[in-house]
Image 1 (cartoon, rainbow, N blue to C red):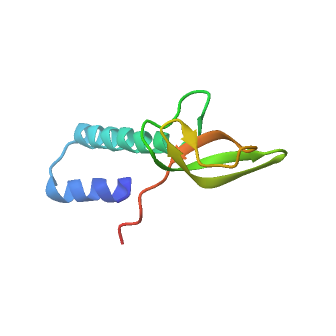
Image 2: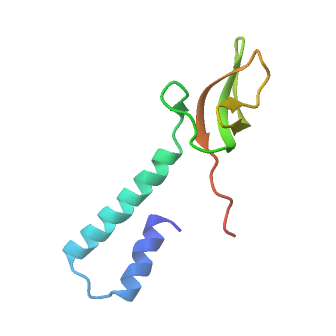
Length: 98
């Protein structure tokens, strides 16, 4: 659900909300959306690694080639070829809800 849809849904429940109320709702929804965006940013492996095993979107370098792939991470190892190197990663997005 988009931010606009969330605001409209809330306003349909609370039609007599004040301007300050609109601002507070907007701020809360924006803050929530920024947290979601942070989850979708590339994280350098030099900064940190995933906290749990699973599949992640990763930037893999192989000599001069560089591309993104879904890669499995197991504790402290990436499931890639020995001569390849993961430089950045991010969690995979949720599946669509429709």
